[in-house]
Image (cartoon, rainbow, N blue to C red; front, side, top):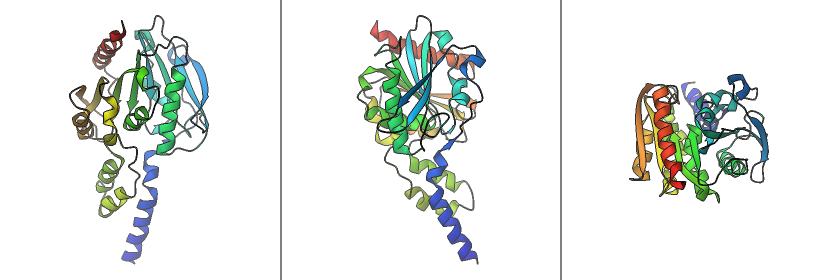
Length: 277
């Protein structure tokens, strides 16, 4: 009986690892107008794929544009909290939902999300007031982990002035193994389970995409969802042209909650886009 139980558990673990990365939600909990921010809906096609949805938040006299790629759960309406303040500080924002999230069609896969991110970047560059060379690509959590692959495959890479990776994991297999190791029932399957995960689009394979692009890595010291050693690893791979800020906060993707963190990030972005002046 014990052997049967372990066999069934192993099958469940191995078949379910890919699903660990995607937790979309369809209904919106808010729109930008609920927090006093102007916006417009944007609908566009992924590369040979489904119709996607995004929001464009214009800024008056914009200094630049942030193209924001959210994490693995929910949709743009919940991740709006990370960027709604930027238009008031002089940056347009384009944020989008991947396939299967929010009002975007389809079902999520790593390859599909990379294609969606490339399409989102291309669509952002068509918006009124967006100037190539003054664009910051900002990925958060899963979005940060997939951004290196998305930029390395994008013909619009030259339009990017800089990039921010907020709380990324360094590889799909590494984070899968850590999560399986953290629970006694799945601990025996940590290496086998990680081996079944597709590592094709892991960020540690694509950090050269940022050279010589200015890169900022952000991570909270108390992040228990994705520990900060993942950002430290990517910082090593990115080389001397990158910055790594290990922030004192606890929690995952909480980097913009504190006003002083917002100010530091804004200073970095303004410095990067000012090179076009």
